[in-house]
Length: 477
Image 1 (cartoon, rainbow, N blue to C red):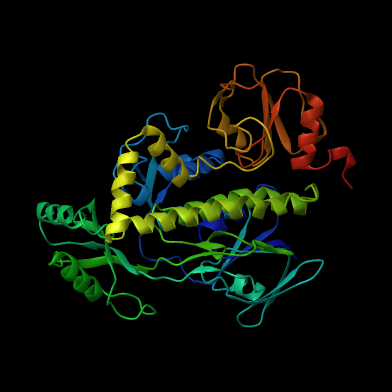
Image 2: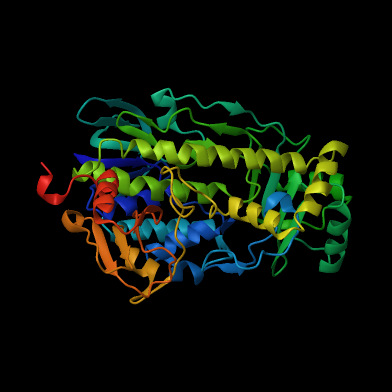
């Protein structure tokens, strides 16, 4: 019997598997596809995701394979400079091929002891008070204590659970791909500059070597159920731009819609949902993959605590309480961005107004922090503004703060040198450092890097240690 079965070995599933293995949870990841995806699709890792990778010692490996870009121009593709002094040591966007990040996270999970089985499609599930029985295509049955559906927008796990997925169906389809263009670069640039004045859904972004990412409205193209062809791209480019730019040699071609949906619940008993299985939205702003990684980071330590026997009674419920509103906010901001891409006079007037407002640093900064998730604050009750927020990677006497979080444990950062993690030291590390770059006396960090407590009183600290990390070791059953 496994502790956790994860359906889906994309970025969310692989990240979750690694997080669970940090706590010696027995994990099996089931992936329907027999081979990793063959196409090379560039995705953007946002500031918060880069911070999470740094917390687990993975960032340097990712940086070697990616390309840094300014943290700017995310919101509705409105071009503004990156705000100065973003509150992060990793204030940039990292463009990276999606297969690279998936391979890295899967390898990381396997190195930590997770099992991955490919060619295994989940077709049924049944849960009871002790665990979940998972049925695979072909009839094999597996047993685990928990099941997590990380199996994408068309999640079988979500459908088997009967969890509602309300929202809006797709109204506007878009073609996206990476191709080579035969036209001279200067001609392409001039034509793009002309088109985007009136059509914000059109884009040709050069990657070098004659390779471009093309984004073009899909109106009038063949059936949505069929994968797009290079001829579809030629047709739409001619319609929108008056030329197909000599498009050839596609790396990958795809179609996406602007469907926007959010699962009613993230948990039903011993079955949970994460990533695209729990929420879908248009890819504008590049938030989807990042949102899934952050789901996994939030869920991993909580589910591990439940399995290891020290979780407070309501800890696992905080996964939905914290992540469902975050996804709702992402859905809202992508709805707003899609409206701002409309060519209708009303949305274009709003776009012009917002473009003016983003000249104010506070507005520009707010929108960048929203898109990159460094503005997220969980509701931990009344307290200083830092409470519930993630803590940036600061200097401490042992080097950098995030280097102390590689093992997925909590951390008491104590500038008074008077406090102790006491009976929770098997789950929470303690760093007494009066030189730490903080303007508060002490704080307690959860394994996901969010500030769970601020203060200097041991009794108050103990209460919050109990809230997040359960009973002290001597009182565990």
